[in-house]
Each structure stands twice: as structure tokens, then as C-alpha cells.
Length: 73
Image (tube, rainbow, N blue to C red):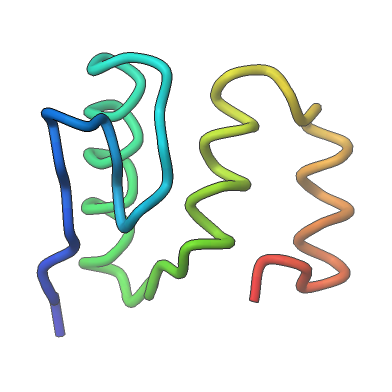
């Protein structure tokens, strides 16, 4: 079941996680929203990880390790 998530375009936050730009916020929100229809339930930690990956602060290898370790919970 889809549930609404908190998006604050004025303060550039998604579930309380700060983004550097409106474009980065909206891109992330769209990706998360699409995955929520498939059963993904985002947490603040998972949004931080997705944001950092999109911004290039986490590599694909790092993202895979985080996924294996389930560090996103």
C-alpha cells in the first residue's frame, strides 16, 4: 500500500533529510515514489543513502555494500 511521504520544497527536505537543490530533491522523491508502489518503505536513513548516492558521495560499490549489510535500516 502506498503511503504519503513528507516533502518540503521550501526547505528542500524529504522526510526531514536535507537536499542541496530542488532538482535533487524532486529526482529522489520521484525515484522513491516509484519504488514505494513496489513495496519499498523509505526511512530517513535510506533516503540519506539514496541522496548521497545520487550526489556521488557513495559509489555503486559502496551502495552494494550498504545493501548487503542492510545498513539502510
